Length: 258
Length: 162
Image (cartoon, rainbow over all chains, first blue to last red; front, side):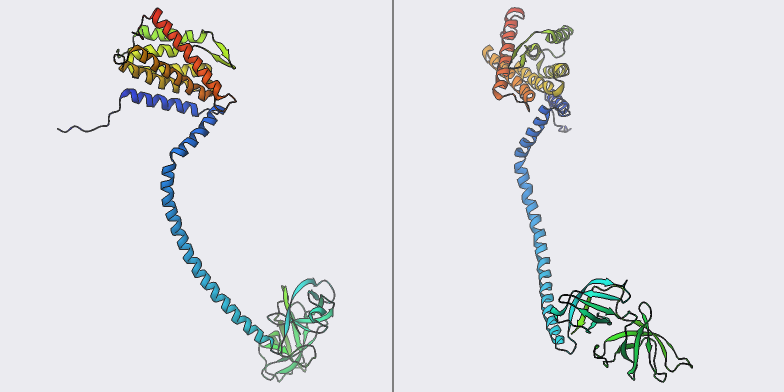
């Protein structure tokens, strides 16, 4: 019958290991300066002893790190090519923008630096002025529609009378017949179109554009959208309520049409 | 070599422990030099009972010494005395092989290593110099060896040096 091979440890060696372990355990539970220093020295010693193992493990970690870096490199290369395509697209768009600059409507971008809604005349202040070729009575608009006109300019700033101001008026054209009318603000973002004849077919949602009759506003700038129409018998014109297209609640950048 | 500790031996061990508590010493560089009677006792324990008993006796003595006078480094003396017990117990295996002078040299080396290791732990992290560590360890060793030689020649009748 084969005898099982159980590793044999002499009892004196076992006793030595046990007593040394117990002693070390007791010693390292202390927090005296001697023990602290001993722990520190032992950790340095262990680091030195374990250096080959650390080095060996380091090789594998470097290999893994290398793989991760390669993966990231591929991703960055793809991203780079994507950015390159964006750059070209940007150039194309810039070319298109330059093309639009040659259109009749030339404008500059301006920052709104102050809102003067508390004043009787609703106005804002822009950071562009005569130095930027901004003069009085220039059209101010945002990407959606008409916002107002410049009423006062200095070298580096100009004041804009907003379309919501009670004294603001602008001549408009609306409908298939391009009928003339006059936009008059009422409250908030709402206003009315005055002078639109009754025979003019009009429907809700139609857009009123600047007529171009005025010397201030160029033609075909969107002004407002029809939200209700009322044809009263006792009135010679339609009562058209409109909503402004420009974002008058929040705007930081505007365009000044030169 | 005996395998189990005899009652008189255990009683003698307790007596040595008590003696160790009251034995006078002298000062060197702020460190008190006290003859280590327990270590001398361990030489005979190793010769008579071998490694296993010697290790356990060393551990027990060390723990008592730690609790009695080295509480801040408790376990240090138990550690060194266990190791010393192993060394002194191993000496019994070569008792008939090595001549007395070699055995004396080995015991001296074991004593010196014991004290060097213990005082290394004790002086670690303190301003004590390496020179002081060696001085104290050598002095303790010399004192221990002299007492062992006197005891062996005068009282125990050449048990160690026979």
